[in-house]
Every structure is written in structure tokens, then in C-alpha cells.
Image (cartoon, rainbow, N blue to C red; front, side, top):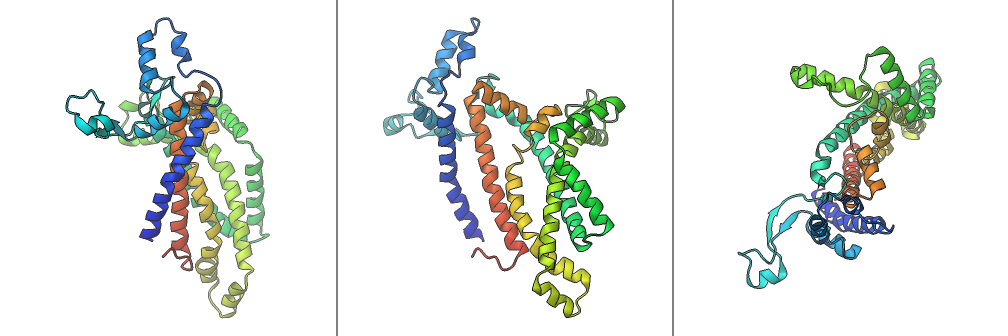
Length: 346
């Protein structure tokens, strides 16, 4: 397994390079100037504009800009003018000053990209992770119950609710919940914390954040849970009709053991594959909900970056999504080998 994981990680490096190069080229296809807002601002120094052009190679071709961004992604390199850089090293420029994550500079926010997305990245990850855990914690047992009790009253009620959840547009549900919250005042209608957040106790801070996250989580979980529950029900029904389940019952095994030890382990395999793709969507899958509910995540920020052609913000978004996609698929493969002993990567 260790060899397989290392091989997958090594393969992911050229994959990310290709993804980033294509994305960088696509960003530079439309005509435009990332520094246009600076040039139109009479108060912004011309010398600063020229410095930014030189620093990020904006006056060069996109391939030179891309190479500069990639080579400065993790290392801050010494310049030839550094007094301790002499001889061959001064020519090759291969001595790094320090190792750091440098995703570039946001021309919209006038700050490094890492500083801009830092807090919002954690907010989006928190919202997505909690929603994903809730969906899986409920979808697996509910889908299993519906399959085992097919056509019962409980199955019909759950199927009806899942159809409603799948047919309800996320944006409409978000607007409806926000309207109800504004009428009742039970839940906040935006943000992540209250104005008196820092004056609250530790438990008070936890419940304050939980109240602010309630509406976005309900919106995300409603549609995702409906689809996952139906999928789990279908997988379980298919497995329950297989010959080995009939044989296990004929041998006199308890029904609980047949369901949870034999049928469930096989029915959950396709769900694990889906989990890998859901994991990759932790950063991008909640953008619309964040914007509608005024949740301070990455969604609205990345949309604004695309509209304003903020190159390095877009590249940061692509890079994070690419890493999450690779990690999600790797995690799904590992979980499949744990859930199904027949799968081996040795």
C-alpha cells in the first residue's frame, strides 16, 4: 500500500503541472490587462505599476509568466545582486532564500493571495466538511433502512422526502430559509460570528458559529442527502437480490448479520468512489450557497476573481481544487481496499 500511495503522489505532480499550465493559458486567452484598474487610478504610482510588471513578468508571454509563478511557488530565490551570491550560483540563480508558500499577488485585493484566502479557506473547509459528515452519517443508515424495509410506510415516507429534497433548487431553499429566519429571528441571516463573539465563553463561541452555519448546512445537506440516500437504497436492494445473500439466509445466519456484515460492505463500495469526488468538491461545491447566504467563504471571492481576471487568485483556486481532487481519489482507493478485502494494491 505504501508503494502504491507513493506512486500515486509522484504521478500527481506532472498531472498538476499540466492542469496548471492549461488553466494559466486559458486565463490569458482573452485580451485584457490585470493591472488595468491600477493604470486608471491617477493616485497609484506609475513606478509601482512598472515594478509589478517586472516582478510578475506581466510584460512577457504567458509561458514566461507561468514559469515564473511555478518557480516561485514554494521558494523565494536569491537575486544576482545579493552580495553573498557569486560565481556559478549567481548565473544559475539556484540558491533559495527560504521555503514558503507563495501563490502570487492578488491585484484586486492588493495583497498576497495567501493572505487573502487564508481565513476564508478555513471557513469553506469547515462548512463543507461538516456538511459532508452529516450527509454520510445519515444517508448510509437511512438508505439501508429503506432497502431492508422496501415498500413499507417508512420507506415510502423517506422516498417522498428524498424526491422533494432532490427537486428543491438550492438557491430557492436558501432564500426560503433566510426569509423564515428574518421573520422569526431564531437564526442569523449571514456571516460566521456575531458582533459580541469575542466576549462569549468557549461554549458560547461554539454555539454562535453553529447558529450562523445552520442555514448554509441545511441547504447543502438537503439536496446532497436526498441523492445519496436514494443511491444507497438502490445499491443495497441490488446486493440483497444477489445469490450469496440468499445462500447466507438459507444457512440460517441471523438477518442482522446478513444485512450489516455481508450486504452492507458490498453495497457501500460504489458510495466510497463517490466520496472521493465529493471530497474534491469541498472547496468549490458550496460556492452558490455561500454567496446566497452571505457566508464568508471562498465562493464569492473566486467568482469575483474570475470576473476581474485576477490571475493568481484563479490559479490558487485551480491548484487547491486539483490537490483536493487527487487526494479525494487516493483516499477513496484506500477506503475501498479497507472495505473490500478483494481489492489489493500490492
